[in-house]
Length: 260
Image (tube, rainbow, N blue to C red):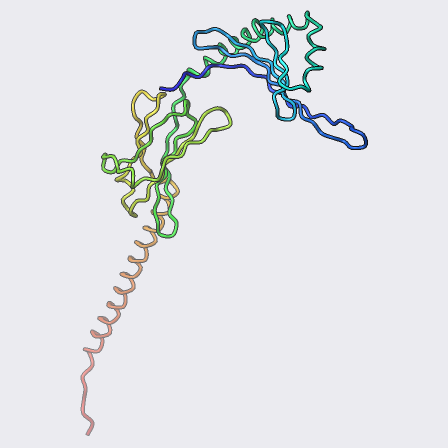
């Protein structure tokens, strides 16, 4: 098992300066990292470092109230800053007291959010493209991120090789969304169901594809048109047959005679 992550409060700054050397303008980058972290034994550690053009430059040492120069160019700044001992004591107070207090407040505020569990909204959609029928199981707006999604056929889990890999992405509001797809034979959609397990659910949730009302209406209209067409065809055939029968009965009243 790897080491436990340590909460940290960081303030990162990136400053770019332009310096005139002779007749040429040169750009330099000043980086600042300022913050504190909570160790595994609940002790705290503060850090205040400067980088210059991507290299270590200066680092504050709270124990001695001095600055450690990481390169010769930092010696001048080190000597100037160490003259002001009051400012150095203020820096140490921030790293050892103010920053850890701010970190603890942030942890307290975030603990309620981090501990909450938001169950997913699950639905199964139906897609037909190029004679291929695909069912997609979607889990929306859930937290935390860990979720299990699997397909069942006749209530039995499918082999993982038959299912497309699960995909989970973050939403903009801190929740997550995920989906898993499956190609099925046309007309057998109702044999398949999607089972979802999540810490926000008391028990696994199962969802199946259900045709939308619009699909039902279209199917009903098509069926109605087909029935009407059959009735019309039967009626037309009946009328034709009836006319032929009447014509035969009328011809039976005439007797052929021979002319002298």
